[in-house]
Amino acid sequence: MSSETATAADKQKLKEMIVKFYAVANNKPPIGLKITDRTAEVFMKMLSEADKCTKTVAYVPLPLGSKTASGNGLIVWVATHVWGMFFDSFSEKLNSVCVTNVLSRWGTEMDMANLGL
Image 1 (cartoon, rainbow, N blue to C red):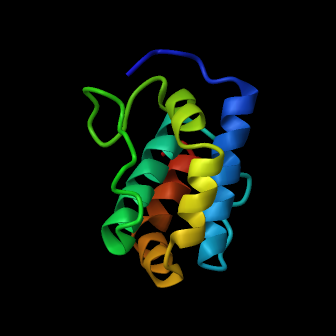
Image 2 (cartoon, one colour):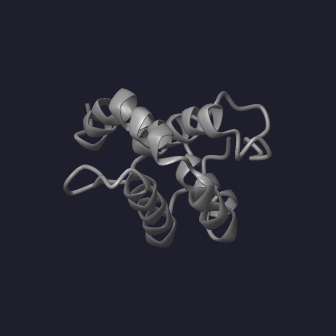
């Protein structure tokens, strides 16, 4: 994983993806959502869980040599490789029941990451 510093635009892209992901389940992300490497890591876990349920993003390329996703540069990677048409088409295929289940399992962890815990 690179150690690139995320720009404000990278963070905004990730925030928009998280908001859209929560919207699939008619839910809202944590109030005052802060985009950090930790919130990006939790979001990637959430996407992975949604993938297991819906099987719609098996073709998502993970960063070479990475665990599911962690470390410096994750925000930049997500903003670069998941943002845009790919995420738009993916989010349209997500099953709302799957996303609801993911949010029930990972929502607290996202809240904690948002608080820096």
